[in-house]
Length: 276
Image (cartoon, rainbow, N blue to C red; front, top):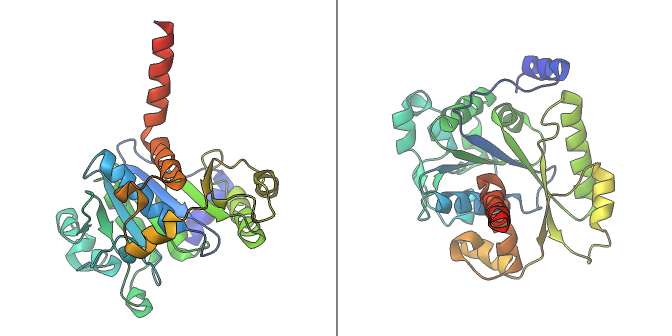
C-alpha cells in the first residue's frame, strides 16, 4: 500500500471501491508468527475448493518464509516470484499456467525457495496479482506474513474479507489489539473483521472475555487445541482434506460455511420448515 493510498484511506475513512464482479479476497492476518495462521489459511482454502472445485486460489504472501507448499505437501514448479515477472505478470492466461494444482481442486501460488528470491516482488506486484486473481476466481485466500509489512499492506488494498488469527497469550492478544487499532486509525474494515482465536481453552490462564476486553471487539470463532492438528501439519494434509473426526475439523468447517453462506442457508431452510 503506497503512502498516498494510506493517507487517502485515513482521511476518507473508507476503502477503494471494488467492482461487484470481483471475487472475494480473504486475507488471513496475524500480528505475530506461531499462531497457526497458515494452518487456518490452508484449511479454509481447501474447504472452499472442495465446496466448488476450481473456484479458489491460495496465495502464499509470506514473501520470505512462507510454507504453504509444505502445509499442502506440494512441490511447485513455479513460485510467487514467477507469477509477477515476465508475461505471467501481464497475461492472465499465462498466469494460470503458473498456478500449482492441489488434489482437492485448489489452485496455489507457493512461496519462494529462499528470502533472496523474494527481493524482486514489490508491493505493486502484489496489488496487480491479487486484482487479477480476484477477476478470475470466486475466492482468493491470502496467507500473509506476520505484522503489517509492505506486501501485507498492499494485499489489504485488495482485501474484501480480513480474517485475523491470534492465540490466547498476552503477546498475541496485545499485538492484535495494536493491529486492529492501526486499521481503526486508517478507517479500514470497520465492522467487517472476523476474529479467530486459535488454541482456545483454559490452559493459558486467560478467558475469551479477557481477550475480547483487550482487543475491544468480540471473538467470532474459537479453534480448540487438537492432537490431530500437529499431525496434519507434519503430514502436509489439512484436516479439511483428510476429514479426520476432531473438534478442530468441525470448527474449520464452520469457518468455511461463514464465507460460503452455507450455514445461513441451512438456518433459513429450518425456519421455512417451521413456518410450513
